[in-house]
Length: 554
Image (cartoon, rainbow, N blue to C red):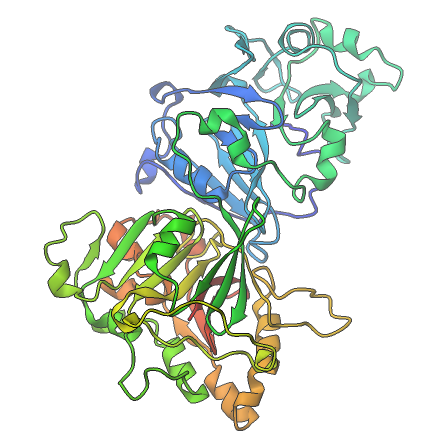
C-alpha cells in the first residue's frame, strides 16, 4: 500500500518483527474477520491525534490501551531494528484496522500516524466523514484490486478546504508501475494520491487532474506535528511535541495524573534527580532517606505495589549490626549489587496489592515492597533503611551533605532503598511492562574529542563500562581485582511464569501478572539471555546487542 512515508529515505531497514496478539496465544485467533470486530471510530485532529492515538504519547501507553480492546484491535505487529532497537524508529502496525504508528527510538514517543486503508475504520473531521458512506473505488496501480479512499474533490472542496500546492514524489527507481505520489499537505495532516509519472508535469493543473473522474482516490493519510509535510519530515523524530495534558479531548473528564518523569540523573551515593518533562522543579530521591509519603506526593500513588513472602527480600534488609551505619566498603559492593536473583532457590507465593492482605503481617512484617510506577518507567524498593553506595571518587571532594532532617526513629521507618529504571527495549523479555525511562550518569565525563557527549540510556554498554571502569578503578588494589569485581553474570530469560523466572532486579512483579508472551515463532526472536554487570551503586542488565535493558540504582 503506497504512502508518503514509503517514498521517503528512512535511513534504516527495519529487520525484525513479531506479533503482539491482543486476543490469544493461539495463532488461529489472530486472523479475526473484520466483520466480527468492532470498527475503530475516531475524530481526526490535525497535528495532534487520531482519536486516542495522540502524538507524543508513549509506546507503552499506546500498546497498553490497544491491547485492552482486543475486539477492536485483534492484531498488533511491532517492527524494529534488532541491532539498534532504541536508536532507530519503532513501527506499530494495526493490520486489521489499516493503521500504522511510528515512534522515535530513544524516547519512544508517537511521531507519525498513518491511515493506509480507509475502509477498515470510520474517521471523521469536524463531524464530516473522511470516507463518505459507499466510498470511492478505482483500480489500483497494479491492476490487481481496488483502492477505496476519499477523493481529492471531497477533501479539497468539502472536508478541509483549499491549501497551498503540494509536491510530487517521483516513483522509485525500478518501479515498473510508474506511479508516483502527489502529497496534498495541510497543517498537521496530509493525503497522498497516486499519479502516473506520464500524467505529471511541473506546470500541470493538479486540481483539475485530481478532480477528474479518472483520478484515483487518496491512498493514505498522515497526521504529524508541523505546518506542512515537507517542513515536518526532516525533524519528524526529534522535534519537541506539546504536552499531552494540553490536548483537551484526552484529559476531559479524567483525574489529573502526575507529570511524567522525562529524565533521571544519577549522581552516585544514592542520589537521583528526577526531571519532569515540562516542569522546572525536579524531585530528588535520596536512597536510605526518601519516604513513601514523599514518593506519593511527588510521583503520585504507584500503579501497583508488589510484595514478596519469601526470603528473596532478605537481600534488601540491613546487614549485621556491625555493618549498619557505615558506607559499604568497596569489597562489599560487588556481592550486594550482583546478588539480585535468588529466585531459583525459592518457590514461595507472590503477593500483590489486589490480593487479600491477611497474610501480609505474618509473611512481610516489615512492609517491604516495590512501588511499581509503570507510567514513569521505574520501580522503587521501599524497605528499612540501608546505607547507600559510596560516592564516586571524582566527586568525594566536592560533595556537599544535604540538609534533610533525619528523624530519631529512622531505623524503624520505611524508606526508598533501591530504584530500578526500565529501558522498555523492543525484543527484550520485560518489553512493555513499563514506559521507557531515560537516564544519565552525571558523574561521568567522557574524554575530550569523544563522540559521546553524555553517558546515558542510549549509550552502548561497552562505552558505559569503559567510563565506569576509569571512574572506579582507584578503589581497587589492582586492575585484576577491578576486572574480577566487574565481570558479567548471565541471567537466564525465558517466557515462563515459574517463580524461578523472577528477578529482584526487575522488582519481581512480572510473576504476579501471570501474563505470557505469544510463544509463536515470531516471538522467539525476542528470546535470549541477558548479562548483569555491577559497579558501585549500579547494576546494568545488558542485551546481547550491547543495549542496556535496565539499571538498578542502590
